[in-house]
Amino acid sequence: MRRSQLYVPANNERMIRKAALELSPDTVILDLEDSVPPEEKEKARELLLRLVPELDWSGKELCVRVNPLDTPFFYADMNLVLRLDKAECVVVPKAEAPLSFIHKGTGRRIEPLIETAGGLLRIEDVSGAREYRRYPTALPTSRCLWEAITERIPTTGSSRRS
Image (tube, rainbow, N blue to C red; front, side, top):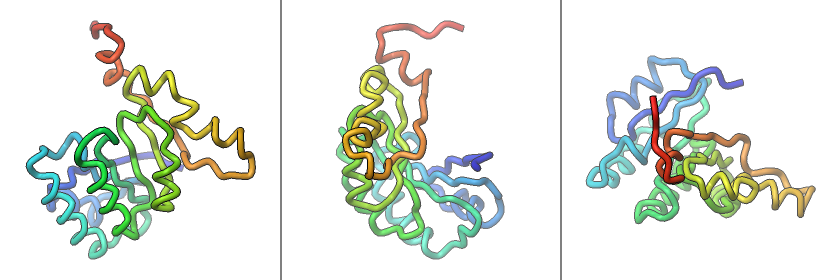
């Protein structure tokens, strides 16, 4: 059971080390998306490639939050995930389409973030539920779905009120 999840910027060595060695969250999510500026993404990937195998992640689930599929960073992020044996799952932001290809290509669990109206409208495809109903012997590739309501508001044409 997950009680706590810790997002850690993938470009911050001190925070990565602290998450691995000093803190005790159930899950550590190494974030390549929002917390890393575009000009630092390659450096962040190199840092993870060096630190993840070196550090002791015992007792912690390790996930990597990649950049969205429609960005120029996604495939480089996925190449990194393939090289990180300790990464158990891939967190996919702004998910709006089926993601089973990620599971098939990496063997990792997928955790989609529903952050847009399009993702919510296609939630059966994003979650893999439609595919699972078609092939009931297949295992679902998503263990959970995350919904980010405040991220989705701008995609609906609405405004946020306090």
